[in-house]
Image 1 (cartoon, rainbow, N blue to C red):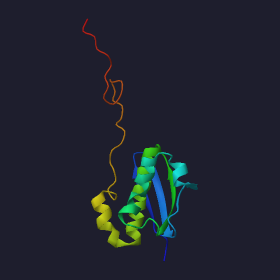
Image 2: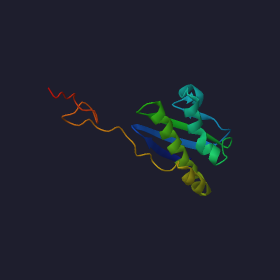
Image 3: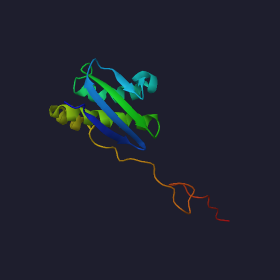
Image 4: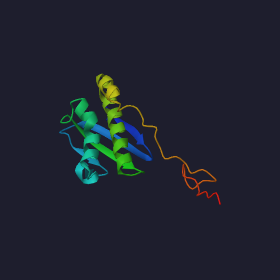
Amino acid sequence: MPVPQSTGRRKEAVARVRIRPGKGILLINGRQLNDYFPRVSLQIGVREPLTVTQTAEKYDCIARVGGGGLAGQAGAVRHALARALVKENETYKAALRSAGFLTRDPRAKERKKYGQKGARKRFQWTKR
């Protein structure tokens, strides 16, 4: 059987995740999860799909992620991991869908507009 592989995106980050039966090892760009994401909140976020499906000790996950910052990368890995779990076992889909892990977060940086200092900020205006 082929190894389930899937892609996840968040902001500018793109993650490719492969899962295989194992002991629960999470490797991101060849490094352990807690080495790559030093913030505990990001580590918890990445592990959430495994926690919801109660498969934390069942699968090893190998992720390649690039682009964006650490928070965006963590969200991309979480999205890809959830998609890979659904490919592995279709019964996980309901739990992951209700937790919101299969939905791509559409929020992204808003572009700068002409005639303004930034996306929303205007140039200073003086009456006199």
